[in-house]
Image (cartoon, rainbow, N blue to C red):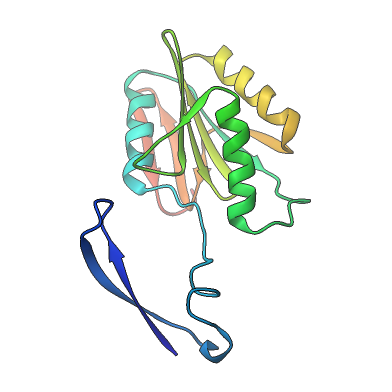
Length: 170
């Protein structure tokens, strides 16, 4: 079954027509089954921007793995739970990328990229980074994988002059 939808700009004007092919379309109903898809996906430009900031300012970047076991809700429900928690902890939700959360207090700043259960945390200081990890670990089962080395199929190798990214695991 083909499902045709209209996609709109944030201002309400028509952006494009989009078509989806469903293998078992006869069991799905428009406006019920088809609009419930949710997947927080961080934009590639956001990843590049945050990594560039970290490298240019020589800031720590950590890779965290969030365990979602025990969260049997739909993806949108656990995303809302996590977003509510992190916003309650002082972060703001970025309007242009729903997977980016930003923390600012004085001169301290931290960027939190969320992609399903994997996250990247960039902080202006190591102490702030560890405080944020400790706060998150109180409510979520997390593993701090340390300095970013592999994220979303991209291998990251730290060098004195920067960060080398490669799409094959080294």
